Image 1 (cartoon, helix red, strand yellow):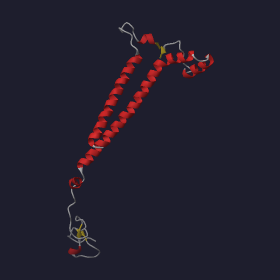
Image 2 (spheres, rainbow, N blue to C red; image 1 turned 30 degrees about the horizontal axis):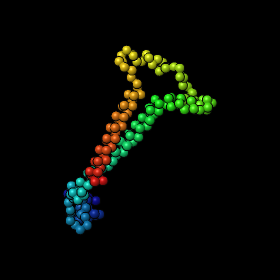
Image 3 (cartoon, rainbow, N blue to C red; image 1 turned 135 degrees about the vertical axis):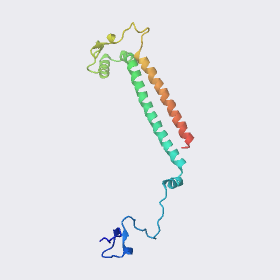
Length: 174
């Protein structure tokens, strides 16, 4: 029930203005006195900001190091596949020469896919010679060697970045 002119709510049936609590005022806490809430800066000041920042950077550097380590593993696998592709024919022929021809045929079939035809250079309906004009190239380019060089550069960069992140973690005092 609302008291006339008080602008607040009064307990049941009481018309005494002193008993009415204005709607806009919050309840009084136990102990009766209001205290100002602590500002956030006061709370954070009590926690060591440098430790927080150092832990954040340590975590970020560790994540970057783990990424570079995974990148190194992938690059090494790519190098292995590329070198294997380039050198496998020579190695296979040397091994097949020392084997029984029937055994060599079994191994040859295992390494060669069923749809592979060694007689054609068909590349999505184009002959490989149609894709590159030999007159444009002064000297023949071995795509395997170019890719090997690129992968080795990537691998060197990856290892250098790992070294930098390890040194950063050491400097942080991990």
